[in-house]
Image (cartoon, rainbow, N blue to C red):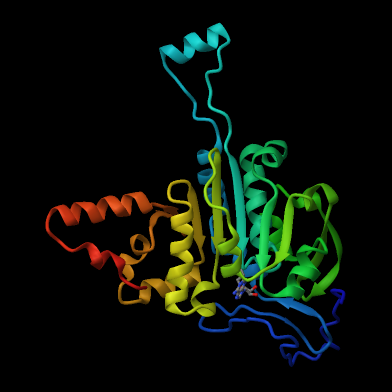
Amino acid sequence: MNISPVNMDSCNIQTKSVRNTPSFQSGWFAFINYKDMNGVVRCGQVNTCLRTLDYKKLAKNIVSEIAPKKLKGFTENVKRFLGIPHEEPWKKANIYCLAGADGTEAYAMADAIIGEIGFEKAKKHVFPIYVSDVTEWIIKEFGKAGKINFSDSDIQRLGNIRKFLVEKGVADSGIKTYELKPEFRECFVFETADLQAKIASFPGAKKGEFNVFVIRNCLYEGFKKNERNAILKELTQKYPEQAMVVLGEFDLEKFRQSKFNKFFPPAVGLRDIGNQCFMTCVNELNESREIFRNRGINPSFLDFDI
Ligand SMILES: C[S@@+](CC[C@H](N)C(=O)[O-])C[C@H]1O[C@@H](n2cnc3c(N)ncnc32)[C@H](O)[C@@H]1O
């Protein structure tokens, strides 16, 4: 079904979810993937998602992990002088947006990364960005169709990718539908998948790669406590030293309210680096366990459920 222009006057605003879509409408973070009675796609998260994370900071963190470290000092200068390789190669960043809905997050990341290293380098060292979501229609009608709905203020924010977006009409009041130009569209791979199954299928860490898992605002509403733990733990064990997990503000707020909040990141093998980003740190966690054990303290309190 197409994303058709809406005349808000004639549109029956009473809406209902026309498909069996996991949709969250709790608290201040009302997120909705649904079609209204006229069959018009409405994605509540579009505007919210762009505002709740500092994508520029995130891109800087990712780039600092994959860019060759600038080697300084006498030996490097001698090597440079003799024409001997004196820099490490770039690492490859693999970015997976799980529960990535209409692709807004992935586009915002692409925008920030292009801002950091330019389109050509981003194509070489970062793209494609992988996006999956369990809701089949949203993947089909947005990501796979190369379409996205943005408000004018969203478009203002996305200065580096604006040139890759072609306006295709009005989707809703204040929101326009854009089509991705082919050269930009090929920077993303969209797939319908349950995130637990997707994570189970990931191969694990490979040398020279840096993996980034974006799982925003889905864990808390979509999974039970033990499932959430299992999901994060599986990621941290498969990527013990070289991965970043980006969580959503809504989920983090919920984690913070939980009883064992202060133990949350280490309990699942994550180290908080700010900006809703966490680095996997299973090795550090094991070291901490060892320290407690050596002091005769049972380290099992580090395994609190969240
Ligand atoms: C609230 S939206 C969040 C979208 C986006 N990550 C953000 O923060 O803007 C929740 C998304 O999670 C998806 N979702 C829910 N359960 C899922 C599951 N088991 N596997 C993959 N995606 C799921 C929904 O289809 C929906 O697109």
